[in-house]
Length: 505
Ligand SMILES: [Zn+2]
Image (cartoon, rainbow, N blue to C red; front, side, top):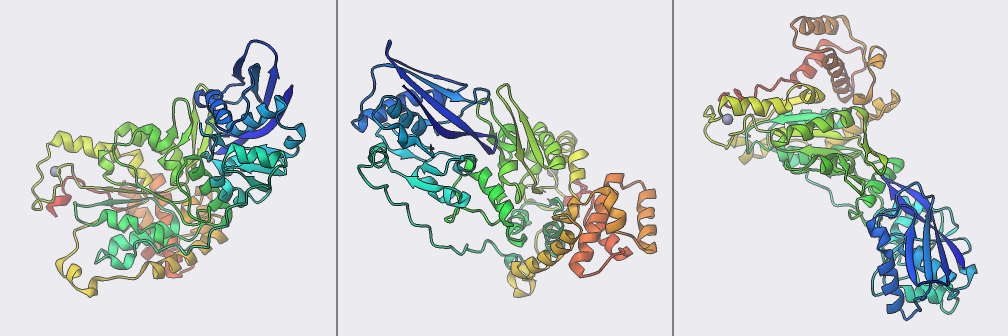
């Protein structure tokens, strides 16, 4: 007999509906899965068999064929286990065919018959069109976010079969978690001194401009970068769902309510491979750090220590806001709209020794600067040098600056101006929009002409200066046209780091 059970599989950061067809017939006993299953999915045979036996259900000694349709897409992971098990029980007439009416099933089976959560529950559930869904207990939070289905859950195959056959009630759903007020993160008020770096953080948050911090160890570059997410506004609902989907697919823990309302902060190690940074993988396509930081901050500490090829892989996604991954099995796109923050020492030997004492060879220095020079450096609209804080800043309260909440309020106001221009932040303004959105007064025009004629600014750099200047105007509450003050401030936040000589300052 044949049974068809709706379920879903993950593709990129999306769910794709899958029909699990189970056919049980007389013949040589066996179990075959067809329809492009990956290795984990093919191993469903062993998990389903053990789960049935553990639950004291009968494993049919017949010829079992499982076909996963549509056949063209690769079925990944163990999420189809539950659908296969239920389909098998119906096809073997241990359950009535009506138990499948209007129901979809999702979940991995443990060998003891337990029903386990699978990564990507949010996009998987979103892909299901059946009115009623049966999901693992751990996925109920994500099912509530989709809010489109009658949700059922069961902790194990035994209680599921009892509920499906009407011999017991459905197990109750876990109660919705209490609304949690998220603990505030690190506060900008803790940072002593550093007026230029603080200003750069505020401009980066308000305008979405990528930021490079260059300074010796102990200058507080990491401390500053970690305070950037706290300056960003809450994610609007659609973006929060988008970010939650990515983290769900990656199998990362979600906040108690399920929805990620705050911009993520990711800080991969400089030893990270290209795959872990941009995503992909030989068999399973996984989101990388760049996608996990989508709508939030990607912090690359020790930027000069990252592999040059790995950094090259960042350029295209930073430009387009998406990553296209092509593998023999499939092509997928991952969202990757991040605020990039890089931090680096002025030179590879920077070990906190006395200023001016650089022990680098000219070769190692050249290799170090080459990694971040040129096209990647050009992506950073804000580049500031961060010095060690002065002793009196560290000791006195006088060095304490504004709190994150105060700065975040200005950032919100500035972003409202960007929204009025039809973009999320000024960094998203296209070149053709600049004349309309960021016009220059006569003084600003001649100021820019002077810089251009000096040959220190590329055409791309010019656009960046105007966007940053516009953000500075928005933060100050000034309306365009931009004045020389805005342009010179933007230029001051875009120094060309002179890596080798910084320590001699
Ligand atoms: Zn050095």
